[in-house]
Length: 370
Image (tube, rainbow, N blue to C red):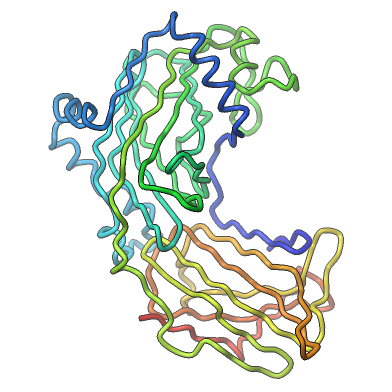
């Protein structure tokens, strides 16, 4: 586990490869796209037109065959199916078809209670040509960026001649709506280029202040083959899947206390806020390591119960009685099971050595849910 000053981020299954464009970059991308409209024809479908075209081109049988893909991403390696996740998966029928690619969004999870989402779409190379480089931004909900926590075939990859399956799982923005937008830029290789160690294309212009698309196009290695946005609306989330604590949430031990300030589970997400109270301030590792404590959260067995999670440790605050408190915020956006109970164990470190964790297993907390 890595600590950074007063925060820690533990990522067990981070993104599989993506760009993280800012607002300025997106503006420049779409400025380039508008300038290229005279050269490259593109079609943008509304949801109504997309549904009609979907039935015409792909048919309901094809959509039925594609069902269940998101469920696979929320199932553990042992083959267990996450209880409830299939009930949260919504069918989506939104299609964009242009000159170069066809994109079809087939499934979505909109988990408002857990602050998470998941999207499954396919991208088809309509030309069969090689050298089509796919770029995309984060999805947006209600015009606000929704960050990725896990991605597969989302951005910065060369499109195969066959159908490519794409998955994005992440966190919803605050105040988001059910109106989702995906934006894509498809580049065509027209000159030599270099591939970096991470599999992405090296910019031929170096650090120029230009956005990534502008550098690739400006360097003469690529041209914009197609660029488009796909809009669709997801259904409301079902609060019947929400689980909250059913038992004790305050625990007192020798020299410290643990208070569960918030805990909720959905089949897709887990949010647990733990207030850690100590007689003396927690030792800080310094040099960017941060506070020397953590909480191990598990289902009590050795099987991983989530594939993507992180934690934040807040600033230390002195209380009126002289003791110290710090907030530990755990957040997982991809669950393999929806547990009825979680085991929470304090972790400290021998002599401040982060490579020598001490698990206080004899004082583990059982947090039960209903």
